[in-house]
Amino acid sequence: MHKFLFVDLDDTLFHSLAKCDPRDALQPIAFLKDGSANSYTNGRQRAFLDMVGQGMTLIPTTARDRDGLARVDYPFTHCRIIDFGGIILAPDGTPDPVWLARMGDDMATALPGLREVLAAIDHYARQAGMPARVRLVEDLGLPFYVNVKDAEKNLDRLDAIEREVVVPWLAAQGREFCLHRNGNNLAVLPKRLNKARAVEYLQARLRDEHGEIMTFGMGDSSTDARFMAACDYAIIPRGTQLSALTLGVL
Ligand SMILES: [Mg+2]
Image 1: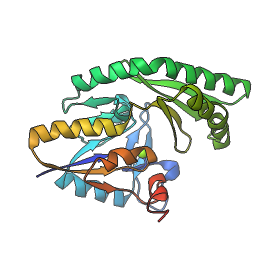
Image 2: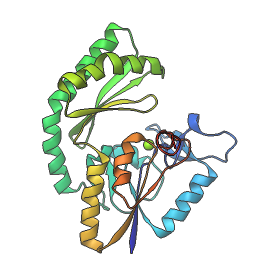
Image 3: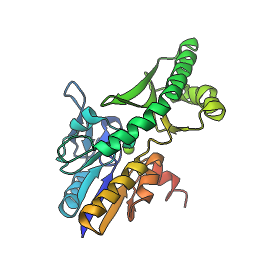
């Protein structure tokens, strides 16, 4: 039986240097645009990749865009789910045309709302003198979501943006949208953009191709939970947002 591991990348398979334990034997695995390393694996993470690479097909299921995925030094050979599920790349790197058309329609519907919340956040941050980096994240010609980072990684300021702008906007006119927070990332996403939808679509295609399959889902973040729940088994790394919200609570 074919076994597929739908796997988030950042903070699941590897970490940025700031989150690594300096006592570990670190090796670079992901790089910035200028070619400098910014994410690393420790020995256990490399052993995990070796282990799953032997018995399973890895399908990255990531918020990274196509360029960001290309800067991860791992030989993914099958489909790749990128942009929070907005794009599915075939093994040859071309976007799945059926999924692209579906997301094109969904994101055209979402675009006015994304522009509105982006303008509201931008206005608030400027008035408050916050060094917030607010942008509409696009890939392959489609707009996907609004991302906000604080230039000085001051999470109190992101909390204020969430409380004063995003929560009231979602309550008043953003019912088709949701908020995601994890560290120095605040994102406002259309609800139709989610990894679970893309995973379910791809699972159906893989079943057409292979018959019965076994699926594993692995991620670190609360936004990964839904796609992991769509798989037969879930794997949660220790010390992550998702482990604190699930196993940690129990
Ligand atoms: Mg992650």
